[in-house]
Length: 127
Image 1: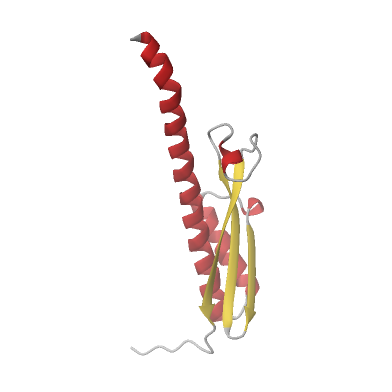
Image 2: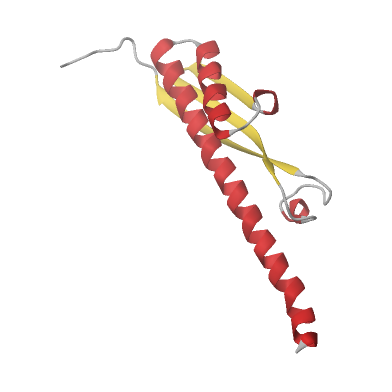
């Protein structure tokens, strides 16, 4: 019985840690998407790329991401506001980053999302 446990435990731990890593990466990707959508929305309404970056970084701070570890690019052209947010997601299982294109000793991986929104000329309130 001890031999079976010794053979299956490492496999089960690797599966569990891999699952935890996937959950952390997906959570970071979702939050990057929310921040990008917020930045695109703010840029489309205000026309200010600076305010859009600030809104995205504020959204990421709510998630617990440090602003200096995030990258927010906002551009406006052709009637569209585009925001691209990249953040670093933690890796808890050693070597897991190598499976996703990183180096085996990486402790974080970069994930990013891009969102667009149509630029509005003015806010119209119909109440």
